[in-house]
Image 1 (spheres, one colour):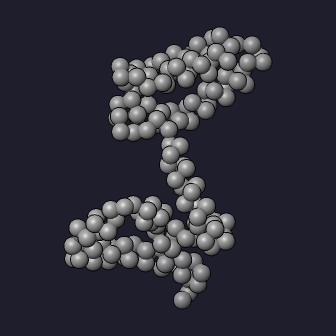
Image 2 (cartoon, one colour):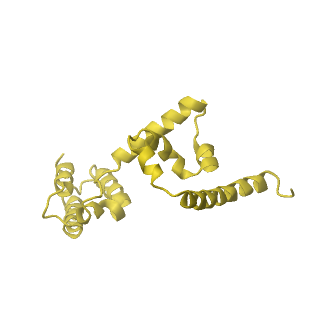
Image 3 (cartoon, helix red, strand yellow):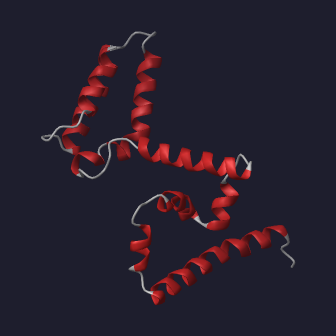
Length: 157
């Protein structure tokens, strides 16, 4: 399908591309789509491509100006899926929302951190005072969600 090939080519990374040039190219492709595919049978395809692209529009071009940003979030999605699967196997529960709420959003990074070779060395560089401060901040933050949950369960208590 020609429109998809054009979009893939436009979004393909290259050294001379910037977010503004790719954005202009994508705008031109979307305009070309509306002009070229104007039959009644094509309208749903054009609307689908346009709405799908506009849904990602805000973050679609950031990777061209910032080389450290990946083009897709596939690796991140894979990481979360693996972590979620591990949690399901450990607990037998399908949802991990309560687990994250109870332990904080950084708990998903624990499994990954435990697999790193230099974890012990890196942790030994942190001073005990700094650890205590961060731990206190973390406990205060988690305590807020505990208090909210208790209030929702029994507002009068």
